[in-house]
Image 1 (cartoon, rainbow, N blue to C red):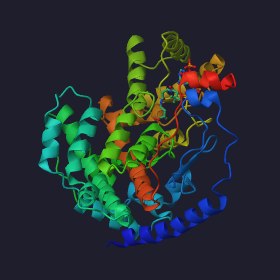
Image 2: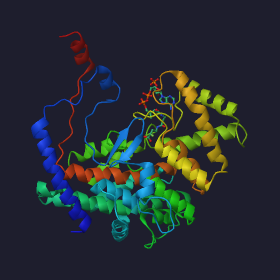
Image 3: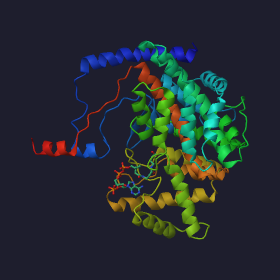
Image 4: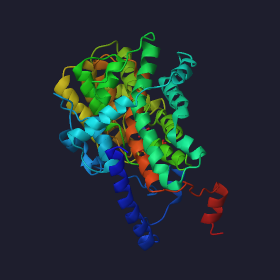
Length: 436
Ligand code: FCX
């Protein structure tokens, strides 16, 4: 057993004791005043109903991973040689183990993922069976599903796996999946947009650096962007659609491949991860309608109002939990100020940031008029040449796997139960309010 796996087991055993004590001593204590009818109809907003160890979201401050904010992660996590951005290996270690990693921990993960990265041919064959016009997210989930043949958990379970060892096989699946996802994603990109000219991995590079390389980008700036991108998109506590779905499907003891593929189908929705492609599409369309070049603030305002009057949302703005500018947006803004302050598209993103919030506020119904993570990412990617925006959600997905799979390891280690909340009919609701 590798030392990270051993360390995880020690941490998991400790927390298991604490959780058992907590449930034994305080199991009947209420953490909520009660659930309202509006909450039941409106996406269960604000109901505390899940435990996720890897990160916690504060409505005003934004996400903290094991207590560390994004600026703190950028400061404390190990970097690539001569790099300034945190390595995603380090964030994964932090989410899984609950402690900041050393340089050696990060290197251990980098080389472990490198060693496990081989993708069997039938996965590529399954992707090839889809028409080239299929959306990259469809190819991505098909790729993950095809890879499910390799699940250690599914194999061991069919042989009669002891409950005590669920976590161990889930850990193996998690490590194998994270190791292989960049190769699958890069394969999809090169297949769809680069005439099927694939690029072999470079074992000397870190996980995100190698991903950038396999996509076909050798610019060090793009590698740095990938490292930052893979860190900031990894996790956003447990209730968002991709994390919740992965957890929910995993609660049926579906293996990590089945669970992640389900989560990725949720990420592919336009109100969730697909919003990153929608943002850049929306900005490019605006520029085209205005005949190219830099729009004025008034022109952006008119375009935003037109979007709203057509019954559409302004992509990249609003959030189900956050009530301030997303620190993931701010981190990307900082990156842009440092590396590409004169980029025209980036400047438009910043003008949109000045224009949209007051308009959304004026509507009176939007709870958060501020930008989320998706409002900025596309402009950065376009700058480095990754202009194929339909691919953007796949990048989000590769990153999100880090958080939801670290969480799945914890689900198994804590022996969390099958998720099965109660549902009622509207008929039941009507009788309930009438006091019947
Ligand atoms: N543009 C226009 N209207 C918006 C809006 C936006 N950006 N954000 C919210 N609203 C509207 C809602 O559509 C809703 O209208 P309705 O009452 O007519 O149905 C009303 O404001 C109240 O919604 P609210 O409670 O503020 O928001 P929700 O929690 O229901 O939804 C999302 C949150 C993120 C889905 C919503 O703000 C939205 O659609 N934003 C645009 C899409 C987007 O950027 N998604 C990415 C989110 C995230 F960062 C991610 O997961 O990647």
